[in-house]
Image 1 (tube, rainbow, N blue to C red):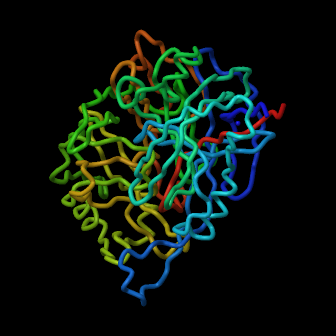
Image 2: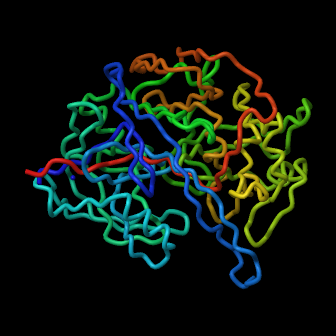
Image 3: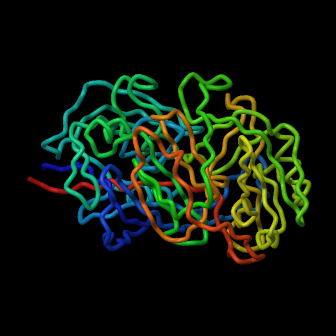
Length: 441
């Protein structure tokens, strides 16, 4: 990553089998890096929260992974995470907490070996990061990262190489604040600007609908105006909230409600700071909101799994869960907010009640982000958000002076017909970049 370099790729690969897309025909505008997103699925068991309940049936669910990778060499796939700030690779695939399927996925994600890279530099420092119930320890190295479908190489980039990990089967690329804020070195977003790949510390994540393949896009330094409707809402990034001490993408949310049969309602407890986090499959909200949504959807709470189970037929309805920010309302269809566990008979709400031990007030994860077009802009200190819709492609670089606020989505707002979008079969989602090892000299 003999001279081996880490290669960020522009196509997509499955976790369990490499699947390569053809290179893009059109070159992106100067000052940005665009990576299309394809959805890949695999089935895994759903964890039983209460291990003493031995008679609880073991449910399977279908996982959607958002993978971005293309290479003629070995891939190292890492999860895109706006909730963390460091890049690290090569988790322990022999970790006893991984299932056999996770072990295979871990191996297929590839491994970076510093000893076989002539450009690798061991920095002599290490760190540990906890991720929910998982964690990783790693040593820092510097090496070269090559960008996809281009001659651009990011030189002397600092990242971690795992020495041990627990309950993690893919490395992570943190896209939050780096040098001078959360870190004492440049992270990936910093390096893109420092080495003149992008002109601004802004990037777009549009996961796209879970049932439309190749619908999503990740753009560093740019935006695709044919991926949302109307003007963008500007949400100022707040300082750390709750018990947190690191900077993340916190914004103020005004309300959460639901539109049922054309009638809108608002739940109590929705006026609070929230963190927008692509590294989380679920959305975490105050219990008053989650229980209110469940009641309106006639959900039944299952304490063994920790989810509200609902009728799968609701996924075909026109009803939406509505999130309001500074006068902007983002509607999340039930097709995206309800997860089919893979058999068409068991479905759950893609949200859980936030608990006091998390240190956060609320979090908007992938069950929310699939309906949003989101620009995370460190340069202007704001998150910009629009209603996701895919009506083609028009990628433009973000001006470093004016920022993305002057951009307008070119898609026309369309009311979805009942059942127009078929089945989001997911209960855990990861947005992932591919990093591949190439060159041996």
